[in-house]
Amino acid sequence: MTKKQSPVTLKDLSKELGFSTSTISRVLNGKGDDYRISKDTQDIIKKAAQDNNFTPNQTARGLRLQKSFTIGLVIPDISNPFFSSIARALENECRKSGYSIILCDSEDQTKLEIDTINILKNRNLDGIIVCPVGIQGKHLIDISETLPIVIIDRYFPNLKLKYVSSNNYQGAFDATIYLSEKGHENIGCIQGIVGTSPNDERIRGYRDALIKKNIKIDESNIVGGNYDIQTGYIETKLLLAKKNPPTAIFAFSNTISLGALKALKEEKKRIPEDVSIISFDDHPYSDFLETPISSITQQNELMGKIAAKLLLDQINGTGNYEQDGILLPTNFTKRKSVNNNIK
Image: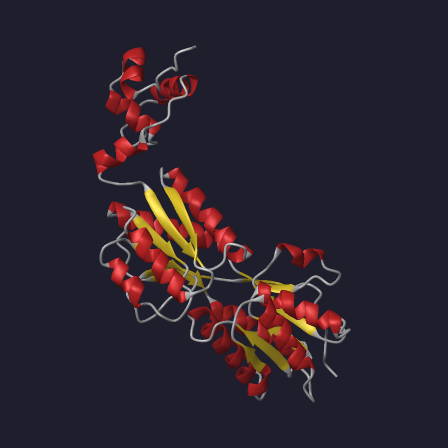
């Protein structure tokens, strides 16, 4: 039986190349330029590490630096393209700095989110990133006292926590103004979770746009209470059953818009001839529908990258930021789902 070969160590590479273990470690950890190690030396070390299938011992490195090089990430729904794209970008950014991610799905339940964070707290993490579910934030403040934390998307203006989100107000304002300028005054609005910052900011943008255009706000047109497909389906059915049904629908998420599209199809309503629709959040399917859907697009990947940077700066004690939050502008992708309703 062939004896299993022992893994190559830093000392082995040092003996082979004639460089100190600290020089080799700095190069393989991406710190060669910081320590002014020549490019030729870096190339020699990287090639030798690759030829020998060398893998840095993260456990030993962590013990030396008193870090685990692991970050917890809690999101409400991994199946939602919005959150999965944030998670992917965030993981890629953390990997560049040698960090791995423990990904947890809170299934849009506050209790599960709290339980998950408590479990992660005992896993010797260096930090945690959370996309909060509901309107409770005390557990996030509690964890911030012992662990660096950044929150994404839904945030709490009254809590001193670092966050990155979208300018939800401006996105909703722009979408509603666009519908009104196309002649729509009876605009149905299917919202997400009431009391969360993205939803409330979108409602504020919707309302302010109608006020700016001197359109009376019909409270019966503001419906919903969750970001799922079922909400979009049920509320669209009910909006279409009204005595004076809306000529346009503004869905507050890509999942809500999916449910709305199903209901519109069942009711044999053509888009945009019978009903116009705009979705907050884009989706890969939007361009491939018979009628491509106009969307307020969030910068999901950039959101993930910035969140990673904010957290790593906290972990490393760098980045003295004065403000707590960063709001990213949204983009309006105009497609063919809005009809001109001017009479």
